[in-house]
Image 1: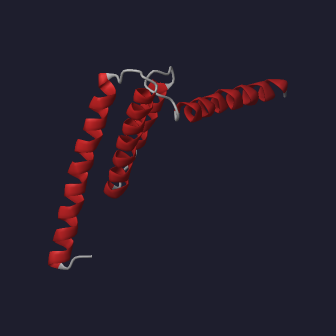
Image 2 (image 1 turned 120 degrees about the vertical axis):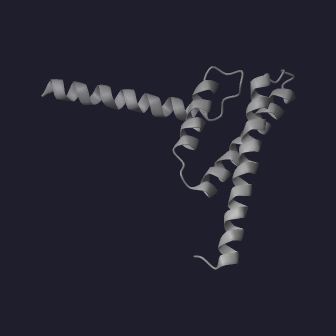
Image 3 (image 1 turned 60 degrees about the vertical axis):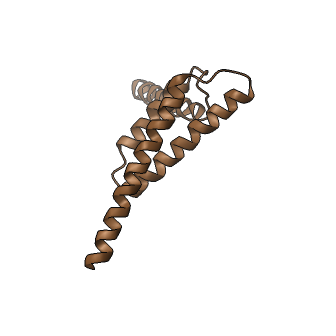
Length: 115
């Protein structure tokens, strides 16, 4: 019985630690050690999103996160790493592409009367 309890306790600590790390990473800046965790989680969320509108919403949210990070670093007098600006540009480009796809799909549905 103690072996089962030990295994369950170890699993709870392991997964609880991952969740705590993920939560702590959400507010990290590019200069923080947890920033790669934040980016990994964002990429995972985006990869698991199948709804085009939800994907667009995530891309816009992530772009706003990059802009806020850049502003926070600038406010601290710290340089903005080039990969942050590059990631912002990528999110904006993908968001514009998804928005155009959604607009085209909406236009086609409205024109042909499909539902």
